[in-house]
Amino acid sequence: MDNPAFDNSESPAGYQTNLPAKKDGWPSDKSSPTDQRRISESQNVDSQGTSVSPEKVSSQPDPSTPLVGLKKEFSLWNGVGIIIGIIIGSGIFVSPGNVLRYTGSPGMSLIVWVVTGLMSITGALCYAELGTMIPKSGGAYAYILEAFGPVPAFLILWIHITIQRPSSRSINALTFATYLLQPIFPSCMAPPYVAVRLIAAALLFTISYINCVGIKFGTRVQDSFAVLKITSLMVIIAAGSYHLAQGHTENLQDLMEGTVDSPSSIATAFYSTLFAYSGWNSLNTLTEELQNPYRNLPKALAISLVTVIIIYTLTNVAYFVVLTPEEILASSAVAVTFGSRMLGFLGWIISLFVACSTFGNCNGNVITQSRLHFAGAREGQLPFCLTLINVKTCTPVASLISVKPDGSALRSGSSVAQIYGAGST
Image (cartoon, rainbow, N blue to C red; front, side, top):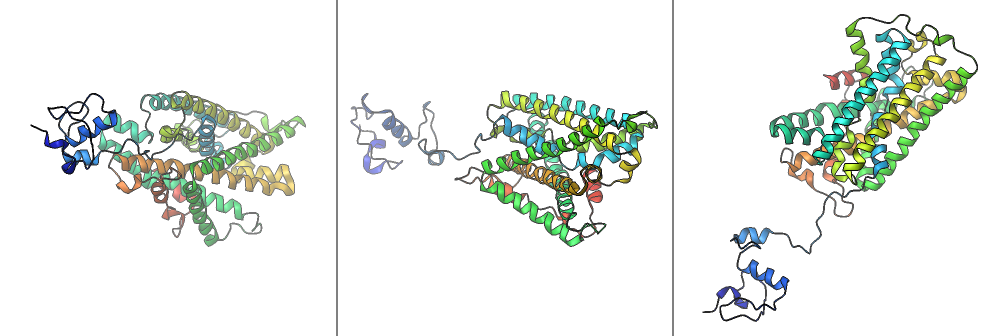
């Protein structure tokens, strides 16, 4: 008796098979693999011979249709640019005063900066191993999800997207606007309040648009600002070296004099340097988009952290060579005071460098947080629409749009110090 599954007029899968059949209704040995696959689908049987429901058959993707997903666009040096671009923000330009205040001496301050860098390298090595063992985007969220389950992972995800990342982004956006306007309003104690908030919001919208255009464009912007950051700090280091070469060593006498021995004060100093080093774990959020992560992730972390430690240490030495401890403590932005002393009328360049540094930090923050949203939505812990990817640019546009300007950047009465305190709790 003929098998009704091969009646062309009533094929469940809608295929016109037109295959020569044997007497028992099965196709001849000369049928092609494609025809055999169609027959299996028409019989609701998979490749292993297991019965499959019609609903499951109809939902299976067509193998000939290319899948849309995140592409591996990040090279080794793109990864280095991401890490350096996020680490070097406003911290190195404004934190040295706080570190000196809580350590009491330039020598102890330098020790805290170096030890914090070594602590960051230790954490980076741990993340390098985790990133190669669990090659998923999402960073700490993906690792906690794998190790402890969905509840702890959701808690860390919620903290990142509601407190930590928005606060950090707001701090850098406000710092960008303040330093961008400072040369325009030199006679004012502080730039106009409304102008600072509007420029901060415009910055975040601009960065979101840049990364929606395409990941290649976003990485070019990130790499360019990472190079500019290193250049700005090299200018400070070169100016300090020139000042030291002229024989100005008076500020380097008795470097440990006045060192504070209070554990709480030293801990607070470490808190300020940890803020300046924060961001070394950012590349793990993009593991699935990194080319050859088993090789490039550890190398990018090592190159970035060693570079930042050397630059941070030499920058602080340059500050102490040119400025006295009293001048550093009295300055709200040590780099700007340094620029006014060493560069004269070109001191405004340092303000521009600080603004560019915070721009790169915000750009990296938006890139990494959007992937965090994407990873959370993929696991069903955020709205599924955040997993949508642009078919032309292969960027998670929905996740990028969801990284909107945080309300604290525009909120009445919010300052950088207030937002910093909120993001630190």
